[in-house]
Image 1 (tube, rainbow, N blue to C red):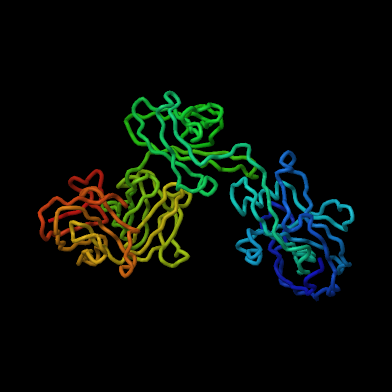
Image 2 (tube, rainbow, N blue to C red):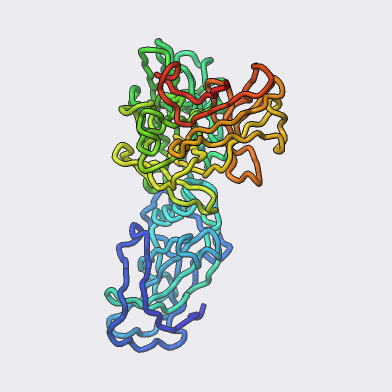
Length: 511
């Protein structure tokens, strides 16, 4: 393939992913006289793996240190004094993404012994290619398309000049190292002493490669439990050698071992626990799966404390149906708050991040940082938000809410035109309390909805359940009181007093 461009373009050679090569040129502005321009066709070469062919790294799985040539240089004219050829391999999921630095991986190739008929041969180790693939696709054992382009440079010290593209830009089918263990789409927690006692672990419903995190919540009584993780294909008749257990039986987190010993949970009182696993967690070079697990109390409620919620006097409340996704309406005012497992300080905390605006501009997103107790949650303008927290991934989404409304047969019907709107408190300092005189037309059911855009109402954010214990996205609430007009009040910052002193929860006050 002929050189596509022989114009010297000075600039930074972004090699990135230095783990694949020790040769990294960061580049500096050229201030010395430019070297002579190379003539046309100064460098040319051919791909070892032509577009459309299979690039099979798995074939080298027994010797991942083996160097694999990918480009043969067939012509290289003499370069200016002190300069030498360097080729960067650009890979992406599609050829269009090769032009997007954020979507591709650039790696400097290593010079190898020249293949027959080649002036120079360039490539990387099989292990390096395997890592590059997984940095694009994550853990996977399926062949995937990989777009490839080779950019040739002439370099000297920290100066680089782009010569052009060499070889043929195209897409190969890349086959990574195949894992010894093939993960399944279903897993169970099984009582090792009584396999008939088992609990299904669930993920989002996606393929295991797209969502490898499974969890199960179950009660542990005073007898404790010896547990194993069992693939769904054999849950009715577990085979010990094909089930997972922890490296250390009593540890609450760590690695799972295929054929390992049972884990142990001992308690002093009956409590709900959640075991979560990441079944496709890889080792550093993505040649093995090393599943991980953690065990924690299954939190019924997550609280939000801090200056933004008036301290620990009136925390905001996040509730859950699945012990993974916690949601609620949160009035954020001022600065600084944290999510906690208690309605006061001293327990588990999730924080240490700042929200940023989402890509669609309709919400704010953030992810719980490491060392959560060391930093607050910040970055939200004052207002009230639908707040959703995934306790497994640590991801948080906060969507501004413009209107709260009651809807249902008890309040006039389930149509969008039947809603009765709650109004904010007259005290401007209280942005968490809403109320209205609601006309209950009959006994029956109703729910509370929060609308981000009242002109386009939907059911994205709602509270339901019992009158004195409302749950995020919970079932419809029953109204059995007298038909007529009642003042209905709800505060999303729950004061710890009376019946709610020890376990504040979301509830209606109906007068």
